[in-house]
Amino acid sequence: IQTIVLDSNQSSKQKLYSLLFENINFQTFEAFYETIFRKISIETIDHNWFLETINPNKYSLTAFIKRFCDIFISLLFLIITLPLWLLVILLIKLTSKGPVFYLSKRCGKNNNPILLYKFRTMQSNARESGPAWTLPDDKRITLLGKFLRRFYIDEWPQFINILKGDLSFVGPRPEELELANIFKLNINFYDIRHLVTPGLTGWAQINQKNTHSINEAKEKLKYDLYYIK
View 1: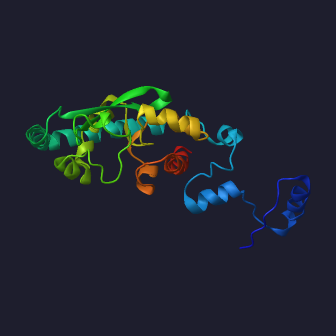
View 2 (view 1 turned 180 degrees about the horizontal axis):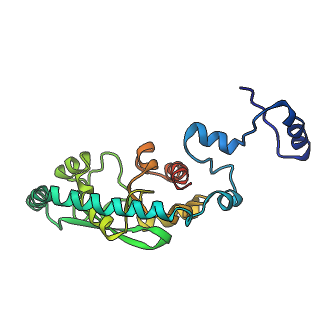
View 3 (view 1 turned 60 degrees about the vertical axis):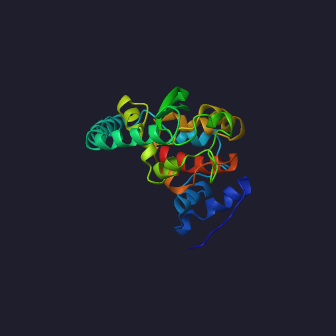
């Protein structure tokens, strides 16, 4: 494989034109980056890339099937795990003061706010004593909360969000409204991730660790855009 790096000026375009008869395949840097890293290079794309690439209304049948699967699987899961829910609720009430569920305001599809349901894993006054995002080894997390987080049991109430249509199983992970507003101001094209229904998990979620900074949120956006495309 021979790689040729050229500037996007007229002279470079003429050089490329002369190579058309050499049976050479051309690929833009953006396409090459996407193929290798399975994410989008937001540093090198512009608004035209989105206009040419993303059409949120193109796959209506796929969206219908996806929604059907969301409803069926979430209902099945809720029925099977109901006895465990009762156990978790009892343990939360016995081990710490405060409500069983934590309601988090998140940024959903089309920038509409949604309430995300979770089992409470932190002290009841956690938001008053620390930052919006959870830090590694965060002291606000209860002992039971560490266990629930380790096995993702704290996320179970979000199956109710899936039933309501606020979430899908797969999609960009919805950020808290406060953080989403910060990221919009500091990261180009951040709003595009809100074109689709957010997810319980997604391509960015399995490829990038939890967000603790603007730079990490920017890296996560690259994977989100790849999924949306």
